[in-house]
Length: 76
Image 1 (cartoon, rainbow, N blue to C red):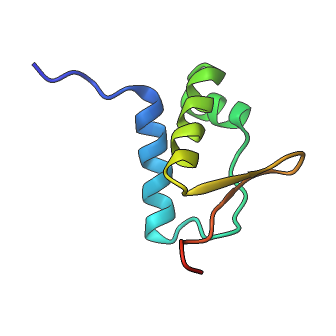
Image 2 (cartoon, rainbow, N blue to C red; image 1 turned 90 degrees about the vertical axis):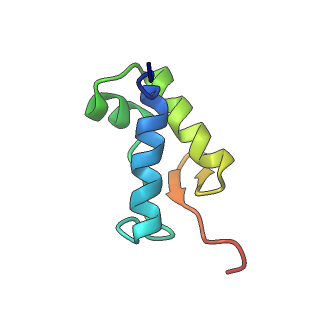
């Protein structure tokens, strides 16, 4: 029996799809971890894990004290 996808993966995949489709463009600011947690009805740790996954995929970049932004595609 298939298991449901982990909530953090669902959030990360949804944001990744928006980045790949161009709905979210390089340089766009992403919601804070707190805002994502509230939007998706999950714990802040779950939202943080989703953002961490996107960072590992090099789709987003953090700027201390400023926020998290969509990263420039590699080679640009």
